Each structure stands twice: as structure tokens, then as C-alpha cells.
Length: 543
Image (cartoon, rainbow, N blue to C red; front, side, top):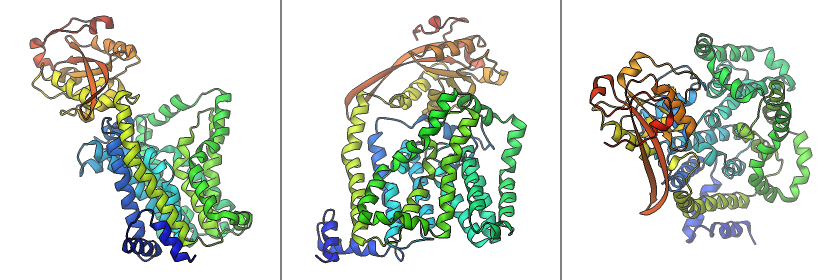
């Protein structure tokens, strides 16, 4: 059977008419000259946007996404937990798009599409045609650019910044031109502004440059020094912020992740690489089917790697080896999910390092597979997930965020004509109320699960505030109780929120809300005296 007939047989699985089959095959064949890659990325975004919109029709945004938006409400050079890039992006996005679930899902997938586009920029340095498509299609078979990406936070923001920094470093190392050196330094700094974990990518750059056979030419040029100066200049404002604010993100990271038992750190270090690479199981299986018996040439292909690919190989080794070493030294935990943004390097190395061409039929089959998975996910998995979560809600309470925020706001306005300006209580619920409430109150950290004796300034006491806890969360209610010792008057409410899907009743959740009206209106609000025992606050009050 001729190869063209084989192509047609494969395409027939998704296209019914000969003209459509020929158009599809012609489009696939014109990767380098046409719009195949942009169309592929647009289709990727559209398909998985449909999936997220359907799958989470009864569930609101993840707390990490709500936190990202909350931090972006003010332009700062950092926060108590994270460097600022993710919040800057959220701020820029919402200056154009509305505050809605679909908007932030689109932002996450756009970030993924940009990441894949930059990966293609790297791949095209070494291959053309089908192999460029193969790289992207294999990555699309992983859960990295859909499910991991939807939780837009300090981890997923690296999906685009790591390939960007890698591409600029590769071009700087190859050309040693001033412009690429500046770009490499700025892109590396941008990755650091995404998450400090990016220090391992930069360490990988240094490691690769030192071990590469062209190291003398690189280090004798101005390129590495220009990159270093540029990177420090871009990071300068953030470094100043760290120095003048007590380096809170480092304190948070050490308090959260360091000081673990050595056995825990050792286990995490040993499982780090296997855990991360397990995500590549499906693409690896697909590549084995594509390569077939030609896998026997793997060793020869590895020894004959292009100089640029060898540089990327050294970078990839650094990103996998250095984190476990640091975890053992610091006795910290280490999660495989932190490595996902760097796995594109291994896909590029395997595909671009293969000495043999990839037959067109394999590209078509892989494209059909990716299309079929996306279609099955949208048509079957997404509705099934939505139906299941209506009765068995997401563990963060996301099924109730919007309704709880709106109900709290409604009850606030029973006691005040002014907008709700400050919210506390459970941290995730506070983020949710800030986002979903029509008043969009500010997330106030002193009101969120205070672990020490609370202190509130006069301005916060004067403008009034509210707090929201899950009804069964005694720790949150106790924390709010301690804060209420500073409020002369307050009211408490208990209410229940139920989910529903297409008219079908689902799960329910009870909440405990406390409202401290503004100072000018407290005399007209129903009140309770000071209460140090949370059982008093939990009492439902009549209106």
C-alpha cells in the first residue's frame, strides 16, 4: 500500500469526505511554511477551554488562582509568600478580561499555548517539518499543559518562563551576541520573579556552560557577564524589596518546606526524578511506537548529539539533579510537581536527537490521537466530572465559593449600606469572597486565621469587616473569636449553601459568618457582646 493511501486511511478516522482528508494532509505537510503550529495551539486552547468550562460548571476557581488575583490587586515587588510575576500577569489580564471563571481558565491555557510556542522556537533550531509537530503533540499528551496549568500559580507561571529563558540562553551561548546575552539575563530574572525554584534552571545554565566543549569561547566573550549584570538589574527592585521587608518569601519557604526529618528528605530526593518523569509515560509510549526498531540507535544518536542539543541535555541534568541535592542539604521536602515545567527539555532531546526521519503517517496518527483524547475529554469526561462533583464536591469547597460569597455580601448589607471592604476567616474562603463578592472586599491578612494575639489598626476597625469559616472548622472559628475581642459589637450568622446541576440537587455545605459593621452604623445593628468562647458566636441570631 502506498504511503499516501496509508495517510488517507488514518485521516479517515476523523474526516468523512475526501476533500477534507486531502486538506488535512496538505496542512500537516506544510508545517514550516504554513499556519499549522498557530492553528494547533489555538485548537488546543479552544478544546481544553471547553473541557474546563464543562467539567467545572459547578465548581469555582482553585484557591491558588484566587490568591494570584488577590495579590495582583496592588502592584508590588513581592508578597509574603511569592515573588510577583504571577500576580502581575493576573493584574494585566483582568485589565482586559472580566472577573469570571472562564476568563481565568482562558488565561491559564493561553499561558500554556505561549509555553508550547516557545518550545517550538527551541525545537526548530534543530529540526523541521514533522518532528516539530511531534514535539508539541507529545507534550500535549501530558497533563502538564491542561490540568497542571489550570491552577495558575507560582508553579504554572514557569511553564512559559522556563522555555523562554532556555531559548534565550541557547541563542546567547551559540551566538555570543550582546542582544541575546541581554535577553538571556532578563529572561532568567523573569523566571526568578515567577518562583525562586528557578534558581535550579539558572544553576543548570551555569553547569551546562562550564561542561560544554565551547565553554572557552563562551566565557571569554562578554555574553555571560552581560547576562549576569542584566539579570541582577532586572531583579534589582525585587532584591531591594526583599532587603527592606525582611525577605518574607524566604521565611515562608523555610518555615513551610525546610526542617523536615532526614528520612523524609531522602525519600523525596530519591523519588523526585521518577515521580516527575512518570508524567511522560504516555508520550514515551507513543514515541516507542513511532520509533519502533530504530530505538536501537539511541546510544549512537546520544553520542552524536548536536552541540546545541548537548547544551540542553546538560541543562536538563542540572534541573533534575540539583533540587534533590538542595533538599538533602536543607532537609526540605521536594515535590515532583515542581519539575513539570522543565520536562519539555527531555521531549526535545529525544525527538530532535533522533537521527532518523519521522514518517508523515506517524505525525497524522499522533495528531488524530491527541484530537481523539481532547474530544473524548470534552464529550464524556467533562460532563461526567461535573455530574460527579455535584454530589461529591471538590475538597477545597470550591462548589460553594461564589454562592457563599454572595450570601455573605447579602447579609452584610442587612446591617450596612456601605460596601464590604475587608474579609477574613478561612484563607481560601477569604480569597473566594474577595473575588466573587459583588463588593470585592480586600483580603486582610490580620483577619485570616491569626495564630497569635491579633492586632487590628483603627482604620480596619472603623470601616468594618467580615469573616467566613466552614461551619465545622473550629480552628477558624476560634481564630475569628480571638479577633472579635477587639471589636465592640458584631453579629454572627450560620447558613447553608447547596449545589445543583441542571436543576438536580447536589451536595450542601454550612458556613459560619461574622459581621462587624462600620463604626458609624454599629449602633443600629443587632449585636452580641464580647465573646471569648466560639460556642457563643456559633449561635444563630434572628433578624
